[in-house]
Each structure stands twice: as C-alpha cells, then as structure tokens.
Amino acid sequence: MEHSLMPQEVPPTWTPIRLPRGLSWPEKLGKQIRHVAHWSQLAMRNRGRPPAFIAWPDLPSRRSVLYKLCRELGWELTNQPRKSVVGIMRFEDSTEKFTPLPQWLLASDACILNQDCVDIRKQTLEKHHVEAFGYGMRIDPLQHPGELVIKSDTNAQHDGRIVQGPLRAEQIVDTHVYQRVIRNQDASGRWLDMRVVWIQNLAPFAYLKFKHEHERFTNQTASVELIAVRDLLSSEEIKNITKLMALHQTEAAELDVLRDADDGKIYVVDLNPTPWGPPVQLGSFQANKAISSMSEKLTHAVSNK
Image (cartoon, rainbow, N blue to C red; front, side, top):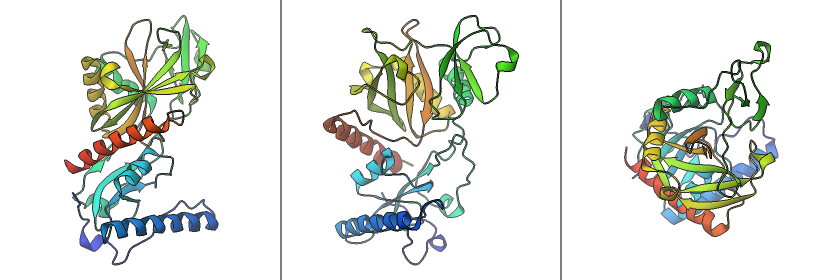
C-alpha cells in the first residue's frame, strides 16, 4: 500500500538523495549516479514513479540490512520527500538520537518505524530488561567480589573486558557499565552469540554466531548458522523480548542475545536499530533466505499502520 506526504511538502520535481557533508565530490557524484540509475530501473519496471521507503536522517549504506530489503522489494530507498511512500524509518546511526523528524515526514500517513527509539544506551537497555524479564546484568562494581565485565555505555563499541572485582571508587566512570559475566557457551564449549531479528515481532529465524574465546566481546565471528527461533527460544522468552521491545519503543532492530550456561537464562546485551547484514560468514543460500523472510516482515509492518 502506498501513502502520500502532504502535497505542499513534496517538491514539484524529483530531488536527489541528501549525502553526508564529509564525502568528497567524486564520492557524492558516484553515489548520486548509482542512485539515479537504480531509480530509473525501478521507474521502468513500475511504468512510472517507483514506491519509495524513506530513511531519516541517515541514508543506509549498501552493507545495511535495510538497503538490501529495499532492493529485494523493488523500493527506492531515499531520505528525500516522495509522492509514493510505502514506509518510513528513523535511521540514525548513534546511541542517542537527537535529530527531530521534519514536519514533511510527520505529516505523512505512512507507517513510521522506530520513531520513538531514541536511546539505545546499555544502561537504558538494562532498565527495560529488568522490567521485562525480572532480572538484569548490572552488578555493583564496588561490592562484587569476583569477575565482572566493563563495557562502554555507547552502542557498538565492542570494548568489553573482564576484570576482577571489587573495584575502587576512583576506577568507576560514568561512561561505562558494569555487568555480571555471562558464560555463553554451548554444550560443546563454543562461545555463542544469538542474533535475533525484530520487525514488529520476532522473525522466524535467528543467527547463531560462534566465536573464539578471544573474540567474545568483538564483532568477529568464526562461523554463522541460521536457525528457527522456535528451536532457540521458549514461549516465555519470546514474550519477555516482546515486552522489552515495547518498552524500548522499537519496531525494527536486531538484538544480541546470550544464554548463560550456568543459569540457563537469556540476556539481551545489545539492541541495534541500524544493523548491517546478514553476517558475511553465512552462505549465500541462507543469506538470501534471511533477506526474503525479513522483506516479508517489513512489508507486513508498513502495511498495518
């Protein structure tokens, strides 16, 4: 289903995508040429203006999941006003999102995903995790007698490290969080991160990301597999994740989930509403399967405002 922006907000002529100021002129020109070429192909296929999906304020890169979904669906991905809009997403690649949505975008009758997802700090995630699951990861670093994890409160830093507690008061900094150590090992002893996909609700699949021990807190993986969510999470765990996403006011994101081998509980350690993917270690057949499934989810999400 296509929607419209307010007529007075849509330029009378087609406008090119808005690019970051830091790019060189050759880079900007190349991106604009590629975008116009793709738009022309879509226009020919649709015998007129193609459906558009608006991301604001950042335009997703070709490595992002959203870019690949729009390609799969035959939608123009833009950050400019269009007359034929299928959906909108706040797409701001920062931990705290301060850029206000413009009036021309808010005036649309199209579904806006992640409009109120403006704070993905780990301390905010911890607060919502406790409310949704009844438990969390935070520990008191001044009192904890054993190993603990120190991480940046900022998203996507991958700088976690294990230290011995308790810590001294002068070692505590507000820019970091202090959490319990989660032994996320499977039955064979491999370190395992679970990456689940949320688009209005859980996607039917998840990624299993196996890591070497020295890669536990990095974005590196040794291998990746695709698995059915029903084989990974219980109905109660899915219910709790649903609560968490409602508290976070997030309609589309990927979550990093760890299952502790000692207590059997799951812990959502990160929430990313601007993910890249699918993981490069995934085979092309499974990657295409994931894109196809997510495309269906996105289409359903923006069609049910």
